[in-house]
Image (cartoon, rainbow, N blue to C red):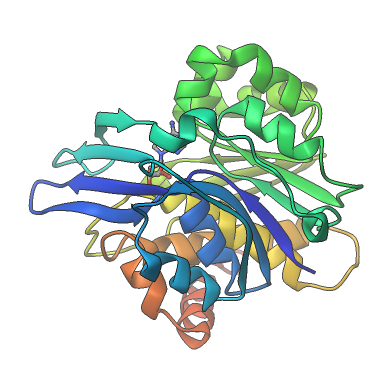
Length: 304
Ligand code: AMP
């Protein structure tokens, strides 16, 4: 099965206390589609300007990512700049230039419309709605979001929740969306708004997965060297959606979602080891299986 990914495609400038790099490939759809492509073919939907380097499009094309839904229009590509503090969990946005993103209207090529798994990566909820208006009977729809949309587009985000099977967000966003301090209560409130499954990410502390009466707490893979946390959430979502697409057409059970969360975490752990998508470019399926195995060894224990 293939996976449809819609989101932002950006040129990022990232500053950490140690390094600064400009005009790097970034954006939620870039991270998510490359992560998903390790497991399944991807149908990418996004927009870039005519300044977007060709080598980035070639990266997508070399990864079984279909770019028929990538619009290249006159103007400048979306640019985002962020700065990390010594605590790499703390980030400030330094600048945002919407550029061609401002008038983006995602249009799905005919060949994308019946993609079974849909990942609405982080992008304005109105655009996520617009994509859902064009897909035909998707099997499983996952949405990601960010604090900005909870602040400026809450009604559209709430109405989107009724149309998705799973929402991915971080702990701060879950609290902001629901007004609950307990993440358990926040997940329950979100599930009452629509999605049957909710994943709440807690940065370097892992992720909580809620569905029906089931619950799974996934730790984060312990890393000594983190160079650039940008895109960890998008990579997690892409790896998760890709893994779900890679299993055959059978039911999406909670066990399957648990495995998908672990694979998403493995991909995210690789992504933060280098700037931009540099690590995702070089990581191999063998590396992914090996880290999955180590993760499993580290996290499981016999009854004490
Ligand atoms: P994350 O680190 O997972 O929050 O994602 C970082 C990526 O999100 C960067 O590569 C940015 O280009 C992209 N981004 C930043 N702001 C926005 C926005 N308002 N809409 C869509 N993508 C964004």
